[in-house]
Image (cartoon, rainbow, N blue to C red):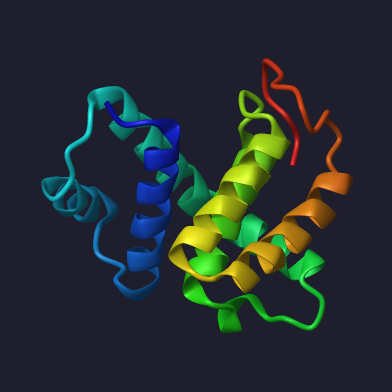
Amino acid sequence: MATRRHAREWAVQFLFQRDFNTNDIDCALADFWNEKNSDPKTRQFTEDLVRGVLLNLAAIDAKIQQYAEHWEVKRMNAVDRNVMRLALYEMLYRPDIPPIVSINEAVDIAKAFSSLESGRFVNGILDRARKNLSRSSREAVSGKIEA
């Protein structure tokens, strides 16, 4: 059985691919899942994350730009950029996930798929964003949150 970590890793992989290939999302997801062995719950969580990031991409990229001093989003490492997109989506639009969990997962995924320096870079930007959230960093909340 896959975990939420696997789902997040798959979401980052899909978002990375999506940066370079803008095929229809449903077809692209179908192709993506052909190569993965996932249970329905993990697959659904992954797709919810992917669709959420893509639906809110402009707002998420604006937040990354706001907190990334002297870095343009389009010039960032593609893995780092998509890791941060995923984490910020969770922090801004998923009240069921504590922001600190999103940050920790993002740092670990950045280290695994990019570099140790990426872990520090991702952590710095996401921590700046965390400080401006209107909710607790360590608790999940019910209901909708405002970005």
